[in-house]
Amino acid sequence: MSFLFGSRSSKTFKPKKNIPEGSHQYELLKHAEATLGSGNLRMAVMLPEGEDLNEWVAVNTVDFFNQINMLYGTITDFCTEESCPVMSAGPKYEYHWADGTNIKKPIKCSAPKYIDYLMTWVQDQLDDETLFPSKIGVPFPKNFMSVAKTILKRLFRVYAHIYHQHFDPVIQLQEEAHLNTSFKHFIFFIQEFNLVDRRELAPLQELIEKLTSKDR
Image (cartoon, rainbow, N blue to C red; front, side):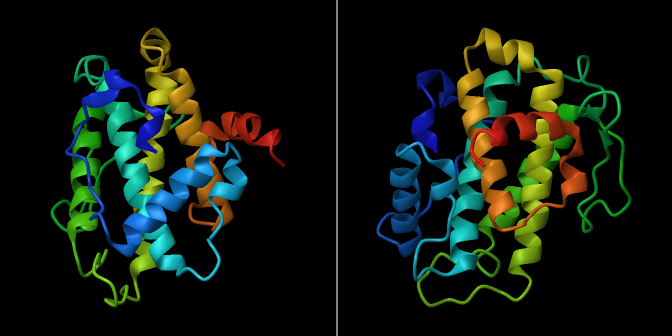
């Protein structure tokens, strides 16, 4: 949640996606923030009683987009065409970009370019009222969960890139605790609802085991 971040993190990579105040989703976000504040992340990610799963996933997906946006915003000076000519997560994992619409065939590009494509694409999905309805009573589309899973799978890649390629600047900027808490929250959430294939998480598997082992 945004309250995890100090004033240093006011620079975001893309504009923050706001949930309209007074809406039911805003109430859900406040509920999530309150339970997160208790420090029990396993409890914080659980579907609140009587709530709609799609809406809960939607609110949290927007929130993870905002968190990653902020985290990546703090290290953009270190993630350049020169330092990161390919989008990777360590030597074994390289990502090529395709969105299925504008770019159908995966292209190899630098990490800053890839992340720009990725965050712009996510933003477009979140702004699409037919996919992420913000008005009460407007139903979620049948393909909502598969879109949300694709968004979360792709957002994971930004975490993976930051951990593998830019962890030193994160430590220098004293953002390590924020990054770990945000990532742990993300992992608990996707585990709770089985939203990202385990194979996709391979680049950070050891870290995931380390961060989650204390809370089993």
